[in-house]
Amino acid sequence: MAAKIIDGKAFAADVRGKVTEHVARLKEEHGITPGLAVVLVGEDPASQVYVRSKGKQTVEVGMNSFEHKLDIDTSEADLLALIDQLNADPTVHGILVQLPLPGHLNSDLVINSIDPAKDVDGFHISNVGLLGTGQKSMVPCTPLGCLMMLREHHGSLSGLNAVVVGRSNIVGKPMANLLLKDSCTVTIAHSRTKDLPEVVRGADIVVGAVGRPEMIVGDWIKPGATVIDVGINRIDAPERGTNEDGSVKTRLVGDCHFASCAEVAGAITPVPGGVGPMTIACLLANTVTACCRANDLDEPQGLTA
Ligand SMILES: Nc1nc(=O)c2c([nH]1)NC[C@@H]1CN(c3ccc(C(=O)N[C@@H](CCC(=O)O)C(=O)O)cc3)C=[N+]21
Image (tube, rainbow, N blue to C red):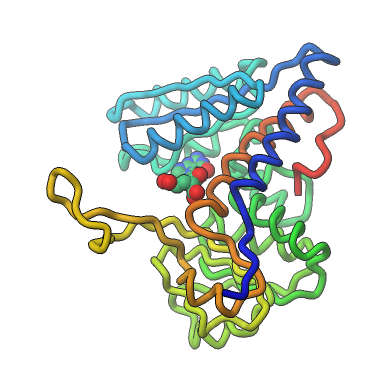
């Protein structure tokens, strides 16, 4: 195995350390405690795990965590009323509505009702437009985490060929905008791209965000390229045996086939332990950034795009 493994867990711990220092300074020098509100509608088990993890880490870095758990059949009006209340609450600097929402709720409408200044996910159309035009915005957490790891590994990204595989609003598109802003030559590819392997072979930086388990294989990777794997896919792992209830055990894999990619790449992020932990760390970083902006204070260095 040739590639350097980029340790997202360690990197995330480092980001949380910086966030902790900033939070302490905001408290001491200004008497302000940043606050993050997380809204979860319904009881999806995976979402519950993420929300718990976010709340725990928010408290660990010294911020206030406000969790709002709503019934699965909550009406759109009630959800919008809660968001209005959080928008108006001066102790809340960041608002995250856990996605996906139940089908009867219009997620575009809900997300766009969040005050853009508190939109720590960076999903509000106003933040999307600001990022797309190179203006100051809230930047989506997953692409921001990927960018931080890429900058740390490469120093400058200027002139590098980046291929983003996946065109989602939450990862692919904002990732492409951030890479463009750092002067990469950017291609957004996806599952229907003609001759996708050949397109990926041209990349110095490959970002896998297509949501298909282990689709990107070593044979597609240019020797020495950096591979950032955003995918989190749970697949059956019969080699691990069965659970007590007789169901087959599972494991997490990325969108990149780790073993074969790692033989060719110069550096690669693992799954788990890569992009995932950085996503939550960047959510905390965005909350501090939002808090500083709301109070006309200098923003933390190195925690924004
Ligand atoms: N409004 C909104 N914003 C989000 O940012 C958001 C969301 N909704 N809905 C769900 C997805 C998913 N997501 C993850 C965050 C951390 C890990 C993470 O830390 N994963 C670990 C462990 C994974 C595990 O063991 O299950 C890892 O990759 O190492 C994964 C996934 C944020 N999301």
